[in-house]
Amino acid sequence: MLPNLTIEPKQPADSCVIWLHGLGADGHDFAPVVPELKLPETLATRFIFPHAPEIPVTINGGMIMPAWYDILEIQLERKIDTKQLCASADNIVNIINQQIDLGIPSNRIFIAGFSQGGAVAYQVALSFPKPLAGLLALSAYFATEKTLNKHPANQEIPIFIMHGIYDDVVSEVLGSNARDHLITEGYNVQYFSYPITHSVCLEQIRKIGELLTNIFT
Image (cartoon, rainbow, N blue to C red):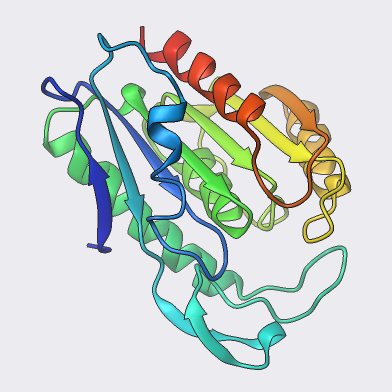
């Protein structure tokens, strides 16, 4: 099981958000977001922030850093290590199954990811064989769009894509391309753009809180 930072609700958890960080960060990166979501105190949502393993990253000169997979080239359609991405997705599936074993129904488990964490989130949520609560891709791209074996259990999953219009790391074109592909495939997608770079903003965080409240209430 991947090491992680877990934030428990005040009462016994009946829902769960698994949130994946971006390249070079760790599970602590998005933990400060939780109180800013302003979730109702009546929600009993556990937050799990897994730590990616430390691996050499080719585009950063082989530097070893936390990463869900290796990025081999800097280009619009990024060349990545798909095998590593799928291995990371399997590790997240293990966390989902652990939560199910702890009594959280699959349809109350929400998957979120930022940047390359979002790429893994796409892989996890759309291939998982039981219905999940939702998918959130932040400043991300659908890296396995052409290879993912989608499972019908999550054909109706609510998908939220959020992207900064000034993102100079993962162009917003990649976010909108993912939206267009998923809509073509019959998925339920909501798309939100914000006047930010490769980051998140308070307006966006509050919107995420609103979405989670609607899903888990």
